[in-house]
Image (tube, rainbow, N blue to C red):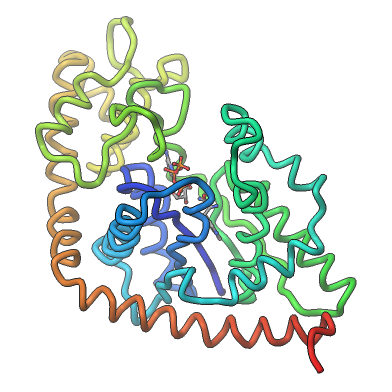
Length: 326
Ligand code: ATP
Ligand code: LTN
């Protein structure tokens, strides 16, 4: 099956990105034909400092490779190096409707604070995402809850285009990853861990040093109930137990049981150590890739060239169908 996933190089990736996107991608490359886009054109829908953006693009690429993505199996590409993304993004804007974009909850949330002062790109972002997906005849897209609505739009645009201009696009299906769930913010277990959070206490970055991890886990918000249990009414604790479970492969229930007598303080201390141990080899591998910029450049250039071959054929077909030819 052909599967495509994208990650925005907006900051240093965190534990949620690792368990929710990087590790599942490594699984997918075994069986599926996997495309991974470092979607820098999406990142710039909110202001980015150019020097930092450049670093984040290299970091995201290094993180995927360090997590185990094999550039011979998966196609790892940089979105802005494949011109067809911006081009199809534009063409699809002419068939997308204002009303359907105004219904997008992510835009509504993100623009709530800033009102009219958000970029037009942030508004049309889901159309660019549809272009990312449709260019490659993608059959399935792994999506978290927050991206379901965007994938639905991609499906609608594909069907509309096929109806108006003739069969052109594969209509993509979602792959809902129930297993890994959401990792929640350490400082507020009501919301998800997020790289654009105002406080770094929200997340464990993949590059956090041992002492930083210890401090962040120690100050993670839990509750004042006694005992250790997996309980929806105790979201902070439940989140720590899920993270513990992800790094040790034990079930959250078993871990809870083994800390019943020991208590929260010890649970947090051991979790911090388990995380440090788990992240150490990943951090070393990321640093290794980052220290070889020529190698990274070669991998991204090759992946982008392979993506470009496929995408440029699709964009030509689209133009002919729309009458944009002589
Ligand atoms: P932001 O919140 O700053 O927009 P993000 O941290 O949510 O960014 P994205 O680039 O939107 O990151 O998401 C990249 C991938 O990481 C997606 O596949 C998403 O499902 C996954 N992901 C992001 N946050 C989490 C989380 N807290 N738990 C599990 N998976 C996550
Ligand atoms: N919007 C997604 C990133 C993204 C994407 C894509 C995901 C851009 N294009 C195509 C899957 C397929 C996000 O913010 N997580």
